[in-house]
Image (cartoon, rainbow, N blue to C red; front, side):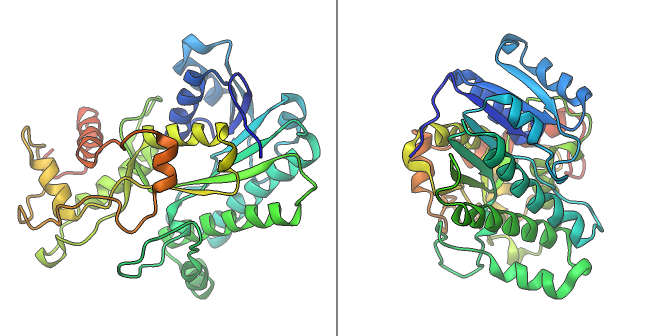
Amino acid sequence: MAVVQPPAKILLTGANGFFAVHAIKDLLQRGYTVVGTVRSAAKGEELVQIFPEYTDKLSYAVVPDIAKPGAFDQVIKEGGFDGVAHTASPVSVPGGALEDFTRPAIDGSLGILESIKQHGSAVKRVVVTSSVVTMLHFQKDLEHTEEHWNDAVLKLVEQKGDKAAPGELYTASKTLAEKAVWKFMKDNEGKVSFDLATINPCFMLGEPIHAVTSRGQLTSPAIFMSEVSKPRPESELGNNSYAVVHVKDVATIHSAIFSRSDAAGHRVITVESTPSWQDIYDILNEEPAFPGAPKGNPGVGKLDTSAAGWDTRYAKELLGRDFIGTKEMIRETEAYLQKNGWSFLTGA
C-alpha cells in the first residue's frame, strides 16, 4: 500500500472552496508541494495570494469544467504528481435539474481517475472528498460504519426526478459519485498505479481563511446556521440537528490519509458531534450571548454531544488528538458571520 510523504507533490481540485483552502494550508504546513485547480486564472491568483509565504510550494492550474471529457488530462500529464486530492463537487443549485447535480459529480470524479490512469503513472494515492450523507440510514440507534450506503436517497430521487429537493439531489450526487469511484477501482484492479481512500465529513463549521464576499460562498457554515435560525416547536428542541465537525480537523485528517499506508480502501467518517437544537441554542446564549440567538427551552437539550451514531475511531486515530469541540466551532462560526454582517439570527 502506498505512502505519500512530504515533500511529495499533490494535485488538489476545486482549490478555492471553503474546505479546500484549509486542506491546502494543512498540506503546505506539512511540507507538501500543492497545485490547486480552479475555474479561472483570477480564482487562481486569489488562491496563491492567501499563502504568500509558500510561493515556491503552491501554484494553480485552470480547469474550467471538471465534467468535460479529458478535463484533467493536461494538468496530470505535465504535473508529475505523487498524490491527488479531489475536492471539487457541485453543491446546491435551487431548482436545479437532476442532471445539473449528477453529471459534474460523477463525470468529474471518474474523469480525473481516468486521467490519472492514462497520464499519472507516478500517482500513488487518490483521496476523494465525499460526505457522510452517502452513508445515512435514518435508523434509530444505528451506528453508521464505512459499510453503510444511502441507497434510500437514490430510490427517492429516481422517483421524483427533477422535482427532488436540492438537498436530495446533492445527497444523491455525492452517493452516486462515491459509488462510481469505488467501482472504478474495482474494475481497474491491477491496471492503475494508485490506491484510493475517501474522506466523509459532515457539516464543516469554523472560520474561512480565503476571501469571502458573501455568506452564500460559505456553503456548509451558512447552510447550517440558516437552519439554526429557523423557528422550531418545543417538541423538536431535544431532537438531533445535524452532525458537525470543525473544518480544521477535516483538513488535518485529509492530510494524514496521504501519509498512512493503511488508509487505502477506507471511507473515513469525520464527525465530531450531533448536537440537539437546544444544545446549539444554549451554546449561542452562553455569555457573551450572541444577539438574536434563539432561546428555546434552556436545559432540554440532550447534553451528550458526542458523535453517537457514527464510527469515528479511524478518523480519531488519524487526527491524533481530540476533535475541536461543538461549542468552539459553533461560536466561532457565528462570530465570523456577525462580524461580517451575515448572521441569520433575527436581531443580530
